[in-house]
Image (cartoon, rainbow, N blue to C red; front, side, top):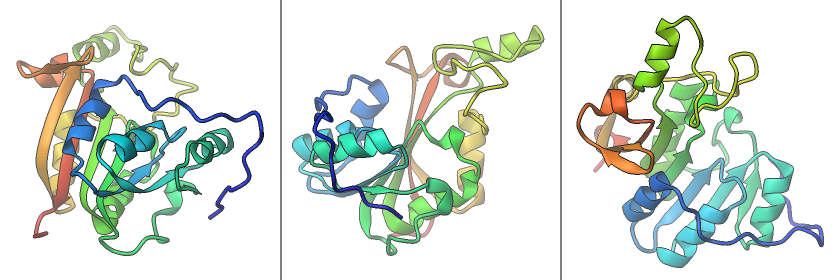
Length: 213
């Protein structure tokens, strides 16, 4: 684990506004004054937003040097750590909410990180691209791996190693003993209800351990 305190002079804090539908929903799910852990927090702008709008307190975890520097410059408490190594530095139930936004598909050990989220947080919130969108299915039917706005990489250079659908995610959550508290599927930033598993490009879930109070 490496904390970064020194910030280069040319690294400036980033604006708090983050125009993304899944983040708007996640913000609404975070209680006022909550203790928040943002995994893969990037430049820290979303955690800075939660600090302002929800009076949240907490930490970000990020591996990229530049993003860590920007988080620090924005006043974010950030820990430089590879999420694949787990969250052993945090005690059980240390946070009210643990967030993993559009990073799940890049994790090598998906089951482990979901268990760790539920261990250190009272609730977990995860968002991920929906591989079951009709365009992806159609592309595979035509013999090619899909390339889209949500997954813009070619098969040989993609960081997305564990692609799933909403139903896949729900099955894994049930298998490891978590309970879904809420979900929303999105297409182009708008909520999708009808045929959501085929029409949505993004899924957001809120969950907790099955037997948590």
